[in-house]
Amino acid sequence: MITIYGINNCDTVKKAIKWLKQENINHEFFDFKKQQLTPELLTSLVNKSEWSALLNKRSTTFRNLPEEIKSNLTDETLFKCVLEQPTLLKRPLLLCDGQLTLGFKPDLYQEIFNINS
Image (tube, rainbow, N blue to C red; front, top):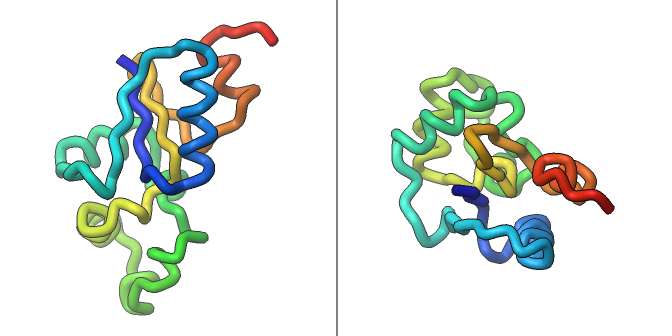
């Protein structure tokens, strides 16, 4: 199963979902604002990538974190913060065949799904 993780009002998530639909690729959408990010799911995502790649430091959510948290970004702190505020994750996150892809670039998606342009 193909799952795309993100939030419904994110422009990049919208582009990724539109691309998947145009290519008739069945997928599920996991909306962080409507569905609960569980510790198990977050652990799975972290195991497929690393915090430095997953954390969206340009997000408003990150910029609004207290300075004492931003200056103490341990795995434990990040895990707790992301569970409370999943919008700290980059998006979209595409999970396909056990591989996690961060962001959306049409060329990369074409490669993942073996689609010739």
